Length: 188
Image (cartoon, rainbow, N blue to C red; front, side, top):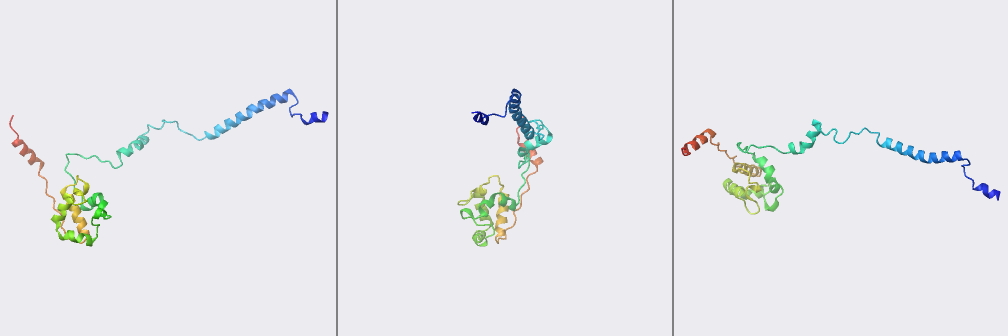
């Protein structure tokens, strides 16, 4: 019986060993947790919002609105007319670049030939007023007729046409307009 009793003895034989074992059971996990926290937080991190008011941070936050593609235009300023190539790239390339909806492709002399034969005025009339699937002014109502004419010349000449660039009529002088409106205004 004494042999069986010896087999089940524990390593803790005195009360002092029991206290040390219980203390180690609490202290070792606590030390492990503290060391893990120190390891995870050892990188220097700035508190949320502490660097948010620097000029660079403010500029980075507002830059998508303030800088990317937005330009302020003076509604009273005279319109800057675009070149034919610029109008083509912005508006016309959507259909004339791929031949969508039966439109003649840019540079395709065979497709443009019959249209060029009709003459500049007829092609311009179709471009400004629309024809079949093409909406008026290629779907961009903000285009000036001169800009549309420049785009027609650009596309037709790239396909074998010999159209001349349209002349831009000079706008009336602002002083002359003001004098004319003042003269026609009723006296008070």
